Image (cartoon, rainbow over all chains, first blue to last red; front, side):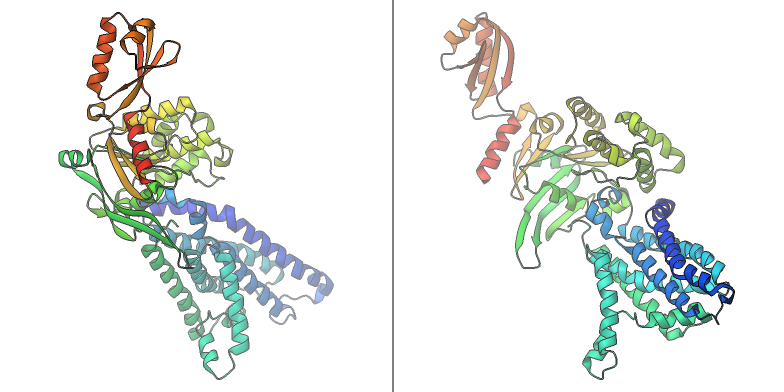
Length: 241
Length: 316
């Protein structure tokens, strides 16, 4: 346990070099490309607060950057080691793979939050009303919700990035098609990941600093259930194919 | 099984495969039996070789021994614990057939990382890493990225990480794969130096000569089954019929006259077939008594090679 805790520094270093820098670069470029031309065009009319006509767009971009960052963070979190065979030397050492990957999930969450902290600092230069605290809360919540499912898929399949994208997009599409109907299909889609709550959550949590508690619990609970399920499969299944 | 009972009776059992089976099933319902009804005990202090043709099930057995794969039948126990449980508690020095280390890691930091995971105290990590780097001749490559290492150096790095801790159990899968002759010999010396009454070593290899030199016993596996368990010591050798190549420095004509059935295998060399070691010795004694100066006596195939050919031949 102590050796694993010490190893978390290496895990964090890997996150920064392999994922964190990419997340910050993508997020910065995205924000720059989206808002810099608008700011120039609006000139002195640019206020960067909640009354600004681009405030809603800023929240949507921030939300999308968080989702993309989580996708980048959890991509191959377990399957990468299995595909490349790195598990062989790692787990011949006296460590428990379940604890190793649970720790990795938490370390990557810290990494995502640090990346979001940097990005929100940059965003505040053009949107002074943008709340770093609210944004980090949102990022943490989405990491658990979306990352938990990603973690599970990374344990269960070798193509987790693709599968997570399909699950995420598929849930959005199926919910929009069947969610409002009053038949068994609308009940069935309720079991899918609660992606429809993300936009609402982004508006309320990042924008106003408050969120519907039941929505937040539903999102976090959904992710946590899949995260734990991933750990159970890791414990009971085989590391090798 | 020759040799099987001797070892388990004389020394404490460390590793035990009990009727182990591993069947791979595809989503379409096809199944392949990689290992079947495999039972074997390995004693404390023993060096056990595992030999078999490609696809015989050697690597699957090792993966089950490290708890990376779950058997579909039977159990693998180490020191009375399930294999995975033992590894998580104690660790095993393991060199896999394919050395997989992230290519961007540098040799030295890779070893520091593995040493951290192995639980080596902070104050000893650099000393221990320095020791294995020196032992495996990696000093000039220590700051290179893994992707820049040659196949042989990568293999040595793999071996270095297996030797970081003073492990009670070492598992080496094709350890000399990619090593040049100098390092192959060096590796043999290192393994010889690792032999200890409380340390058990498993070596899976295609190289029968290597196993003959290093192992106490060799499990010959084919098609997922244990075909034979062979003791490598010559005291156990009781070949039904073995061919030896005898080279003479003097007395060529005398050999031809004394052994008319011997085949001439080249200048001053003869192939002689004997039915026992005793017969070989009496033949040599007779030649020497007649004035022949024997330069060398080499079996055409080692005891192990002979057993391997018979075992794999029988099963195919």
